[in-house]
Length: 127
Picture 1 (cartoon, rainbow, N blue to C red):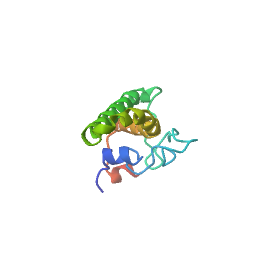
Picture 2 (cartoon, rainbow, N blue to C red; picture 1 turned 120 degrees about the horizontal axis):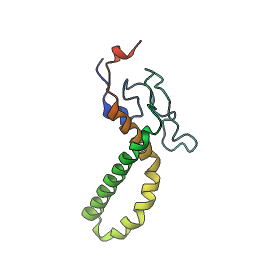
Picture 3 (cartoon, rainbow, N blue to C red; picture 1 turned 90 degrees about the vertical axis):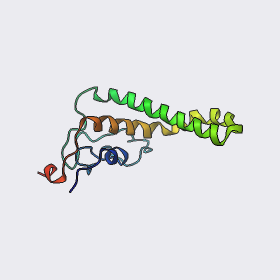
């Protein structure tokens, strides 16, 4: 088998090492009780998903970059396609960002860890 893709693991809640085990306990970012609960270790390969205390502080910068990129794209769409309705952009940006907060939180954590873990072949991961 081929190596798992880092992009696949980030987008689909998978371990960046094996691409099989789930990163977060729940599949949905909108589960109110457990949206932020992570597995401490990958259920499939045993990779440590919490390398050290404070490790995910760097994910705050990733989250910020996702918010900025989203706002720029959202603004450009409004300017190019809905110019007469720019007031709606201003009224909608805050609620939209609040709704996207759990998704960006999870995406930033998966992206941050994926920067530091190298994917491995499936044969090498199995014990």
